[in-house]
Every structure is written in C-alpha cells, then in structure tokens.
Length: 388
Image (cartoon, rainbow, N blue to C red):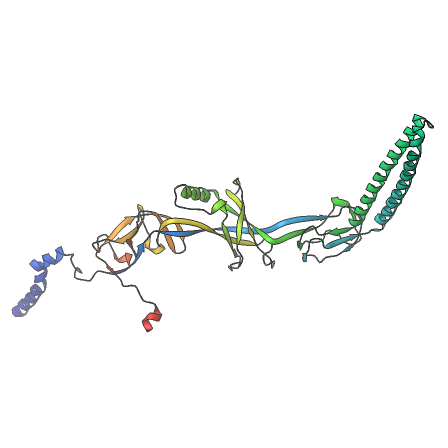
C-alpha cells in the first residue's frame, strides 16, 4: 500500500511541478493561461472623410394644388347636371345648365331698348344739325339751339345705357351655362335637377386640381434647430433656397416614380404640434395620387462635407457614452470615445472622435479588451470570384 501511495504522490508532483517552477512564472508574465493562443481575427472599416449625401424623412399628406368652388352667377331653375361625380373635368367644360328662357326674354327686351335709344339719338342728332345754321343766321333763339344740342347729348347717353343693359343681358344668358373654372377631379353635386339656384350664394360642387399635387409635412422645431446649427458650423450644406428634391413613399411602401420640389416653407411654428409646415409640389399627370393620402416624404439635396462614417454595429454604448474600438499601430485594440450624429443608411455619422485613415473594428468586439492583440481578417471575396 505504501508503494502505491508514493507512486500516486510522484505523479501528482510531476503534473504540478512545471506550474510552480520558473517556466510557470514566465508564462504568467506573458499573459497567463491562453497566452499562447493566436490573437482573435477582427473585421475593420477604414474611417475616411467624404462628402456624404444627407436625406431627411417625414410623415406627409397629399392635397390638391387648387380647390375651386363651383357656383352659379344667376338665379334660376337647375335643368341638368352635365358631368359625372368624382370624374375628371376640363376647364371650360359645362357642368350645369340653368333654365335660359327668362334670360332670353330679357335679352330681347334689351335689344329692343337699344334699337329705340338709337332711333331717338338719330332724330336728336338731325335736329341739332338743322338748328346749327339757323342759329348762325339768328333765325332761332339761343334756347332752342341749346335744347337741340342737349337732346342730342342725352339721347347719346341713353344709347350707351341701353347697350350696357344689352351686354348685361347677354352675360346673364351665358351664365345659365355653369362651366368648370379649372381642370381637376369633380366632387359630389350638392344640388340636383329641378332645384332653385339663388346665384352665388349656393355651392353646387367643388373641383380639385391634382396635377401637380401638393404634399404637406411638418418639420419638428428641434430638428430644424439642429439642422441650422449644423449649417452654421459647416457640418451640413443645404440646397439653394431650401429647394429640396422630394421623393414620395406611399402607404404601401412603394416609391412614387416622379419627384418634386419643395415650394413653400412656413416661418411660423405651430403651437399645437411644434412643427413648421412645409409644402412640396409633385407632378401627377396620370392622377395616381389622390388628395388626402398619407405618405412619407424623403428630402434629397443636402450634403455633409468631409463626414466620417462607421457601420452602426461598430458603435458601442458605455457608462461615459458612445465609443468604438480601433486597431492601433501596435496591432492592439484601442478604445476611442466618439460623438455620433444622425444615421445615413446603415452608417453612423461620427461628428467627433475619429479622423481619416483610422481602422475601426466592426466585427469581433465582444472578444476584445483594451490593449488586446488583434489580427485583421482578410476581406471575404464575393461568391462569384470564389468559384473561379
């Protein structure tokens, strides 16, 4: 039994001996257990300043570029509706017909009045012409001559008045045809055949112009302030006069094929929503967009000059804020605090903390610690190249 026990003790000492000897101390100095393992491979991205297009996206709603109320100009009985509700109409197209009979009679009376006034004027003009030489020869009195001249002037004025009434009668007769004042989509008819229309007081229908169509959206006040700060500090360049190019993403996620321009920006901030209203004009020749649609606008045209970007997954959050891991010149992992701005696609814009040419660790950061040696992995080749 004593021999077996000694053998076991000898084996144990042999196993433990190297850890306790000089070789064990040297290994501990070099990093302890695992110090002989190769450094972990990491993927890196080069932080290079470049002019980066900046887009902004907001919730929006479409509206007609013109919304016109259709009203009759004369009072009468509505005889006929000449359009289909909800369908496109052209400017000048007849929408309603009002009974023209009373206005035709008024036109005939006005024409007769003009004829009578012209006949009286011709008679007065001839009288004045006869009295003129007689007055020169003192054959008629001053009063008789003055009366003849005044009668000519009065009847001339009567002719003008009668002609004005004739013009008014013609206009009223023409107004019995209620035409579309603009092209667009007609609304619901608010009066039906047989109704008495009392002139402009009664709304008949509305027309909404949808080409071009307007898109309204609100820019939050805090975002506007941040944008102005970036512009003042040279981190952002906006298009001239704020004329952003507008792309529209519809409610189903599809992108509308035609692009528009911002054509209005309100200086006021709404006290209820805290946003500033902006309007864009978008071509809509096929009428695919209808007023009242909800969508999202994407504004193009702004640029961030010399912006430094890194993939979003490379930015980590710590107790003191955001930071990234860099590969130092010694080939070790280095922590660098950064200030991050807005996103640009899958990239995060770094406003402070990085400079051009630095290698930011993108993948493999969970295996690292400050000062740990790392190995930069070879970039993976596309599948097509691998097959070759």
